[in-house]
Amino acid sequence: MMVGMKVEIENNIIAFDVQYGNREKLSIQIDSIGLITVKAPQNTNEKTIIRAMEQNSKWILAKLHEILEVQKTPKVREYHGKERFFHLGKEFFLHELITVNGLGEEELKNSLKKFYISSCKKIVGERIRIYQQQLGVKPKIIEVVESKNQWGSCNSNKKITFNYRLAMVPIEVIDYVVVHELCHLIHMNHDRSFWRRVGSIMPDYKKKQEYLTSHGHYMTL
Image (cartoon, rainbow, N blue to C red; front, side, top):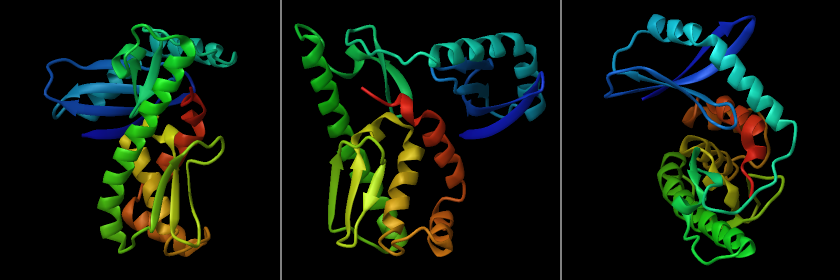
């Protein structure tokens, strides 16, 4: 189970996720784009988690500052086995996603792109089958494309397209984009009725929007 929480550290409001599981000790992890995850034993109370964040506040703030400094300079992607890329919200070494042996940089980039396209088609197809039943709609055409400025789109012919880079974000964020586009089969614009429909399926959709706004630009090749 994943729960979102916040804590104030030196006048900074720090948002983080808490992942409960079968573990003995609590740990704090910060990924390369600044997302903080606290992994805690089942039934750990909120005070214990907040205290752990406060006790590690110097390390957390230093790490976030370090990441912010790196973010000021655009990252030049390198395609080798030790370079890390996102898949479903988690970071993997390139060699964990595709075969790297004997391939040049351009071949590796093309191979990785094919991996994301294939992964996106599979995941989006699975999620659409779930949510189209809940919404009582069905798209006529579903495509996975490359786009620089859209995560998804829907036209009046009931054709829905998804950006292949969605395969890089967490599954719950993919779900939001799927629900968003499926709701356009009912409401073509972004009026109140549209957002009420989205909210009826995904009450925390604004959190997913914030993720795409804050971290979407890191999901690149």
